[in-house]
Amino acid sequence: MKQENTIPYSPYIPFFKDVADYNVAFGHLYPYQFMDWKTEVLSWKESCYLHAGLNPPMPARITGPDALTLFRDHCINDFSRFSVGASKHAVMCNYKGNVMADGMLLRTEDNAFVSYFLSPYLEYIASRGNYDVNIEDLTGKTFLFQLGGSLSLKILEAATQESLSDIKFIWHRTVHIYGDELPPTGIAVRIFRLGVAGTLAYEVHGDIKDAPLVYQALMAAGQPFNLVRLGMRAYGMNHTENGFAQAFIHFLPAWTQDEDFMDYLNGKYDALLAKLPGSAGVDITRRYFNPIDLGWGHMITFDHDFVGRAALEVAMQQQAKKIGWCFKKYADIK
Image (cartoon, rainbow, N blue to C red; front, side, top):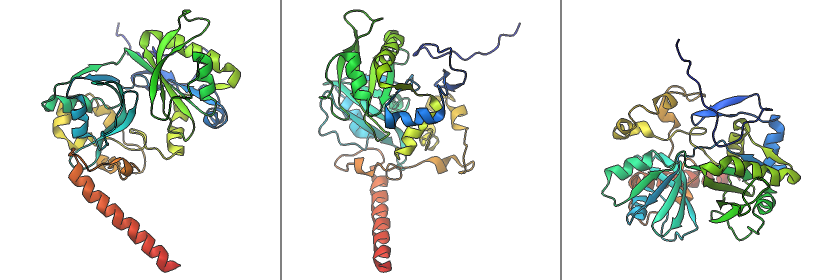
């Protein structure tokens, strides 16, 4: 008898009997919508949402004396100030200046970092350079939950039983989550303040074995604050609404422009890259953008050599000319 192919349910969250609509996200079934779309979309404006649909977030732990050098060589970012407890929205480009990977990079120790959504390009560039680094794939070992909205801090403080007001934007630290179903000593997690919907927001990172218990504890802590479970349908709206571009929703990483990288992937992502919806047509390169196109030009620092620097210097000059032309035309009209 032929065995049918099945898609596993997400191991990161409990199974919800009240959810009837699922979609495939990151290789497993995840609730597409928990309740009506309007309630979910309004959650980050009126209360708070809890989202777990970014699991697994391609997590990796990078250690070694050359770890920071690796990032300097391939990121547009400024690394002159990068303390333990801080983070960067790391952006990596190819020689044409188009984005190959972007994601969060957290510094957890002097020579230790944790990245999200920089893989598999991160492993590729590490394998091609002479870097003394070790990259550990944390997929299936860690989880990432998001809480966004005006009441997110109150919910997290209720769950952690401590003040978290000291955690500034893009900073993080470890705390403990408490709850009726949790051990008396609590469960250790990392609280990371980050938000892309234009509202107060946080992420909760932890060990995969604790994921369902932490999720339930956050739901319990959020019940008095009208916490809303957020599905994949409404999730993309908070990026779009705030004008923050997200890979595979608003643009594609320019992977096909690097034949060696495509060989490195060995066809693993071919099906994903073959999906070209929308009005841009069948030309995949029309979905490639540089950081300036995506609104990230202010993050580019030309005080160090990095892949794509020459192309981005030209793009920056062209952008300045365009802006100058617009101001001149506006002045003429007045």
